[in-house]
Length: 114
Length: 114
Image (cartoon, rainbow over all chains, first blue to last red):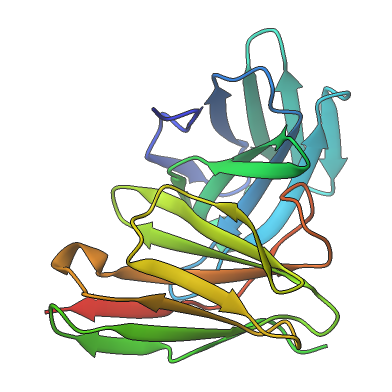
């Protein structure tokens, strides 16, 4: 049961244009969402996060939008650069008792073409 | 500040053997999480240790075990290796327990089981 879904395994965008990566989740108990970026042969690196009390968080070229009613979040990269080519993972966190659990999507491979 | 280090970076084992992977978190971080990454399954959570105690556990068989030492360094052990255990094993550290905190990943250990 994939609670966090990234339905597009890959995405190709032209340099300078907008990249939109999507993520859907099924459990309304998730209250914190994170995006990570992963280059080949490296571990993922944290990109940006958003709490469920917000609907938008912006950091430079990266903006994450959260639509709680649709259980959907998206990562916008504007403008896209070739160095943004990587696999992007969406992750959702929920509290279970005194602990928290993090569920990861399968990732979307972004290719930004010069 | 040094990042998360994992040793070894690459490992080749045969079925039935056992393996121990090591992770040194960022100095001051007390939480260490382990993940298995395979092409079709994305990032699968194995377990999290905080202050030498296992805080969270994923859905992996008992062949997968771990521990954390007083200096926060962590080891992961896989016994009776199977072909399907071939994967990239990632370790992530964070300051606090709980996956809402930003996690810092190591480069991973690439395990190949023949």
